[in-house]
Image (cartoon, rainbow, N blue to C red; front, top):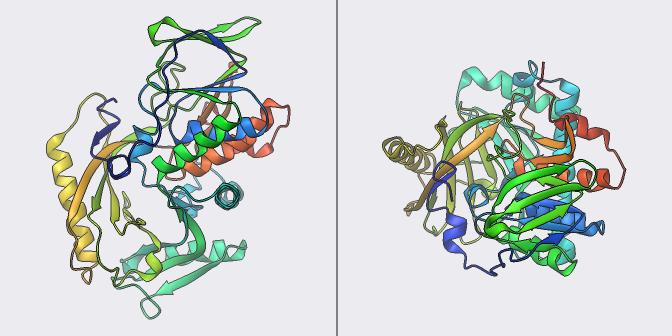
Length: 406
C-alpha cells in the first residue's frame, strides 16, 4: 500500500483475521460494469449493482479492505463536517438540509442490509453528539440545533445544566439514533460475500494500469500481468488515488491521525457510548468498539504526497492521547495500542462526487469524500445502479463531478 495514504497500524485490519483471500486476475474477461477499488466503497457498489442484476467485476490493486478502508473510523453520522451556517458560501441551506436527510436515508439502508443478512460487522445504532466547550460558541451550536429541530430531526439541545457526559460541555446538539458504527473491514467482506453469491467477480492484487475508452464498444482496462477486462463503463471507487482516471482536483487533502486503546473496563462519563465530535478546527472525533476500545482521531495537517512526517505523527499521537485522558478522567485504564494516519479529502460543501464524468459517459465516479464517505457511497450505490438502468435521481445534482468548475 502507498505510504502517503496509510501509515501505521490501523486497528480494524490489525485485530481482524483475513476471512477470505481473493484470486488475482489470470485471464481476459468481460462484464458490464468495471468497479476499480476493493475497499468499502467498491463492496457497496458491488452490492447494489448485483442487486439490480447488473454484471460487475471488482478490481483491487492491494488486498481487499486495506488502505483507506482500514484507516476509516466508520463513525457514521448524517451531519456534515462543518455546521450548516459555515457552509453557506459553498452551498445553500436547502441543499444542506437535503444532504442531512440523505444521510438518514443511507443510515436506514445500512440498517436494512444488516437486518436482512445478519450482523457480521459489529454494527450498532448510535446517538451522536456535536459539542463545544467554549462559551463563545454556544449561540452557533444552538443555531445548528434549532435548524435541525425545525426541519424534523430528532435532536436535543444540551447545556451545562443538562449535560449527561462526564466532561466539560457548554453546548451540544444531541441526535437521537442519529448515527451508527461498524467494523469497516468486516463490513467490506460481508458485502463481498453477498456480492459473490450474486455472481460478482472480485480480484485482489490486480492493479489497473491503463484505461482505454473504446469509441463504440465500451471500456477496456489493462491490469498487472497483462490481462484485460472489457466492460461498458468503469466506476472509480479508489478513494483519494484518482490520477489514472482524471487530472481533476477532487478535493483538499489532509493527513488525519487516529489512535485506538486497548480494551477498557468501563466507560464512566461516556453517556450511552454515543458518537462524539467537537467543534474545534480541525475537529476531533470519538467512538468505542464492540471489544471495548476507544478510537479518537483528528489533528489534521496538510497532506504532502510521498512523504511521511514521522516527527509530526508522533506529536499528533501524543496530543490525541492526552486529550482523550483529559476528557475522560473517570476511565482509569486508558492505554494506547494502535497508532495510524493517512489521507483524508474534503470539499467546499462537504459532499463527495457521484456520477458520470462530464466529458466521458463511460467514466463514472463514486468518491465518498468527507467524514460521511461511507454514507455517500451507500447513496452512490443506490443512485448509480439506478442510473445504469436509465433511472435518474435528481439528488445526484448535489454530488455532480463538475459542480465546482467555473
